[in-house]
Amino acid sequence: KEIKQAEFIISNTDYKKSPEPNLPEYAFIGRSNVGKSSLINMLAGRKSLAKTSGRPGKTQLINHFLMDKRWYLVDLPGYGYAKVSKKAQAEWGSMISEYLKNRENLVCVFVLIDSRLEPQKADLEFINFVGANQLPIAFIFTKADKQSINKTQKVISAYKKTLKASWEEFPPHFISSATSGAGKNEVLGFIEQLNDA
Ligand code: GTP
Ligand code: MG
Image (cartoon, rainbow, N blue to C red; front, side):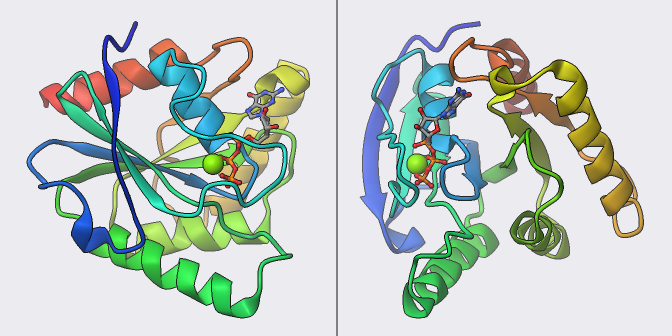
């Protein structure tokens, strides 16, 4: 699958300044440095549509991209970066929670998880926040090229086990690599299905 046209629209700290909510929207979120912006570039087939960096905390704003004039993709700043001040973390929290709770055209929240790490507190907290607000969620296990598929599957199993108590069903999930392009067809296919639903 290919995105034919990907266009940057606007960056905001206030979700109210987002584009008119007249198209389906998909948000990408996860811990700082998990590979959100890299995944977005991989999905779009563009090298530097979203800005990436080896240092955590690169993305600071709510960034809207228009894909094939048909749906919005949103790149969000990462959470859980310890070096960020308490004040900045609180600002992040309210910016993101306001966006997630109020954005009426939001179809699915993709939570990106580093496929190499056992379930992390910051991720579980965020996942449960999304669940508590009854927003549709899917997981993307990133950077799968960095280890064997076996190890990635073990991490996914650990999430299944951890979430079993609080989640009726384990959400749809994908394995991705921004370097190999793994997961691209699956994620774009999933979005297409939801767009057509
Ligand atoms: P923030 O905007 O800071 O929250 O980070 P982010 O989640 O947008 O991460 P970003 O895409 O900027 O990537 C962080 C680092 O991880 C960069 O050095 C990327 O090159 C690297 N990276 C991202 N995805 C992958 C991947 O799938 N495989 C490998 N090997 N490296 C990756
Ligand atoms: Mg980023």
